Length: 253
Ligand code: 13P
Image (cartoon, rainbow, N blue to C red; front, side):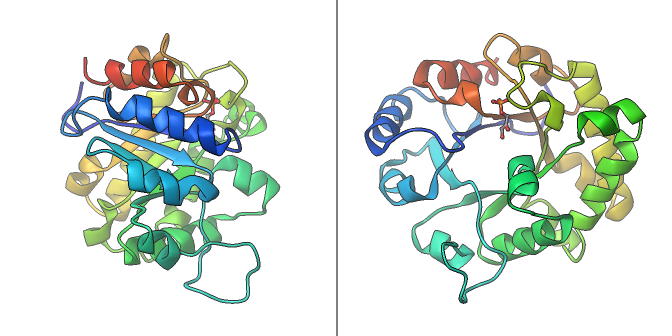
């Protein structure tokens, strides 16, 4: 395991009711390992944030799956960074591939959201990743490099360590088909190299970069063993307390 503290991020997407969400937090709060060993964060639908943030324990944090790129305005149905901050939310996912695909998010909007989150002391988890067509064409590196470069436009060196990156190849999300740990590590190394060219090697070496896409308790160790993978962003396998706890446990070993 490398020196960067791992993050096990659970992305619930549009699942669970209020009671199910509360039950999960009650169970996981008391069993999750110390935050100095592994950072455990659950990204819930925004309607649950208020109840769950109140109940989050010292070692389990709750984050938002999305937010708007502006402070405030006439944007019906949207939620801003100041609103999240006012409820004590400290993490937000930006640019998940599902939001890019179904809600027209672009690298530019992802960039604005990341900047907005940093301004409000919320850690953005910036998601990048290629489609199957791009992977098969052999242009993954160029594609992801461009996503990173655009996402970090205007983000100062001093703020880079306030961000986290999640590399999620779209073809591995919810498909049961993972990238091989080596494939994931190679792309994540390339992301680090891109950050080194945008900023410097020292900064790039400290940024935490997660892998996401069909991660489960049975395969997480193979990803965490890689030199450049600092944790996981997990969908399906983060929904049940036992499964999420097994993922977190793997990051302590
Ligand atoms: P799965 O773990 O269900 O493949 O989802 C990955 C993901 O999209 C997490 O953000």
